[in-house]
Image (spheres, rainbow, N blue to C red):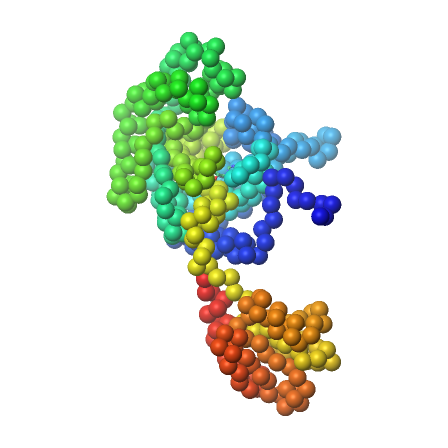
Length: 430
Ligand code: AMP
């Protein structure tokens, strides 16, 4: 075994799996465009304060999961991005995007970093695709990002996913609710676990998220946020549900679903897969009208968005057999030379085929003809093109169809004509 191993919590993606990623990414790119979203790419690291403000200092991510470093003793602290929303919002404010148009619809597929304890479905480097709709916040806007997310799942053929939705009301609603929660949990103080005790002071809504069964039992009797909402929030929520119903998107209302930060408001949602075990969340999102202000924007920048974990999405697809039809194929043609004296002739033919747009491969390890044929089959080439002394002398080549074993003799132009057509077809075949 090599002295060097991939760092715990990171993984390599080899070609067969990379083909699955490419396929999923392709669907994300085309559906995002279909809904009028454009791609944004932001830096992998940002100033640490951005995440402290943009995610919230009381969250686990900021509290203990960030990869933070100082480039030099006097430099400002930097952090590898643990999520995308803060960076995208930072970029939008920095560029003053809203002065160009009132609404911006951005999406991304990006690598993220969190110092969590690695386990199945939880890595230290992972990817998310997500979208941010910036500039307006309304039931129609949040329904649009939810619909895009659900259509990606549907197009990938996923089934059995559960979409849970809730409304968090506005800041005033939550303040009243927060007080009610503190009042409710106070008598249970001695039986709460350490994390919940800490949350009771700073962010009692997050106790509702606790996975601890003992805490969950107490949570069951807690007041419901829904009872603290004012009329506007209730109507807002009903409108979101109306859009989901009109579009045939199944959902469950879950009043215990919270995004524990102050700048989240109104709709929050999460998608889970029963296929995933303990880490069952595939993605989630909501509305975060207060984030821009939190990041120092002088004006309101209402927004909503979602993020979906790519690894968990792919894991669910694998379990549901959705990659079975994905048939990673080899090159269209493998150039086989009869003897090593003809190696340079072979290389020149391969070059000409590639220049003609035909996916071509050729041996670079001076292997025997038999070994070259074995390789052509291993990499699933559709054809083999033989280069022998006669071929070089006459300019007529033997082309063998490796599926039907049919063989024909043709000029190189003739070969190209035959291979060009399937080349295009094969390339896009799934
Ligand atoms: P979050 O940004 O925490 O709301 O996470 C959104 C989605 O990203 C989750 O539902 C997961 O699918 C995925 N995710 C979050 N953390 C990790 C991780 N450490 N490893 C793999 N996927 C993750």
